[in-house]
Length: 227
View (cartoon, helix red, strand yellow):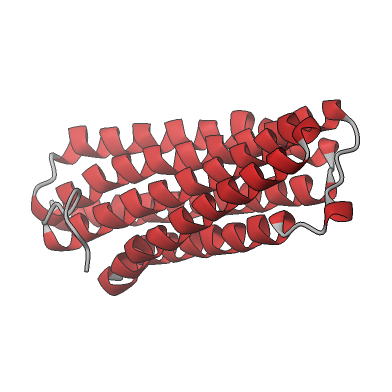
């Protein structure tokens, strides 16, 4: 039975790797759309999430359920499939959050020009730094899952605190800006929404890495300090 299930397990692993790539690329498009104010690219991000990523997520879930029904796996194979189902859900939510960032781009477009450069603010740089950490977390998360790399999974979990700190710093910066220029509060609230979405993406990466640890060790580490 184990030999019969292995090709299907490998297909599942390949499929989730493809979904991870799609989601990473769509996150990159969403942030590029934000930084360049490209509304057409933002709409493409939303379309891809609805038409491609959501479809792939459903197909992967159905494939896992077919394998479980056909082979009734146990031990490591069962843990793998259970983990894939959970990881699949987290990846789909990361895709939704990328689409949410893209939607913020379209909302900002309706506000007209909202340039902050004249105020000499650090906000764009802070958002870029937070995004860079979040994107790195996503890449490392997929590598940890596909390679069964427990050390990398723990590293990602610890990095989540840095992204949380970045989000708090951005919120504090926004509060300072709004106090100085209340007329920009609607525009700035959209940017805070982007920071929140990035923070949530990092949280989902952490969830996936906790599941990677469970898959490899059979140990549930959620709600436990990882240091």
